[in-house]
Length: 345
Image (cartoon, rainbow, N blue to C red; front, side, top):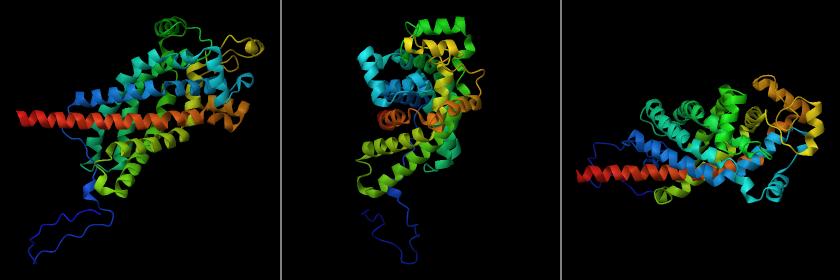
């Protein structure tokens, strides 16, 4: 139970201002005001890099299932995908393409969180609990950060596929530029933005609501349990947002990998009978989201749009927990560092 913060001596002519039942001043969410722009960028860059490096093997499983799943000969589940990778490629197969993600995750998250903080300050109007402002700010941040990470994400996914024809990040970049042109790096940008916009809206709305709900359970210990609160709220937000946006993520993966096909002999007949594409079955005439969705539904039904949703949730739940707890901890560190510098000067 919260302690009474009212003064011991009050003038009886004045009445205490009534508060709404859900008003908890002791658990108001800190906005971390006063941080420099570069501090937001560093905190976001570290948080994003830690998140993606830690969860990369799960992301590889998700990519394999989504990219190869539309071909009947390669329909696989989570256990089959993991067993196949470990048997054929060994544990290192789970980390193919991690160099591309390492190059893209840091700068992209630096842009994401710094843009988010600027927009949040502008849209919130001084209210740190404005969920609509958080969601809107996240959308603006997504548009900016996706422009940075989409090329490296495409390279990363191509390297993750089994029997990838590329030797590494630089080889993939050079060959894509020579064979497909610069536009291939942004073939899925529109889909990525359209996917991440609702993802961000659901993510931030869920994160803020869950965080506040957890703090209201035990207001007295909210400050002491800050790490647990951020991690739990982040996990819930990441899981729900990932499940809701899986269909668009499937479309994005298909567009990014449509020019690749593995050399496995089981796909040779399909490659000869169909237009060559991701696994030798699909090659899309354009980058239309509707065209890709219709193709997937025609071949696999609506269930095909949810392919990889389990590893996607397994990725985003702990990833969001890691990212948010790391980011908030770094923001607090910089805030205390700024406070110490001000006191000394």
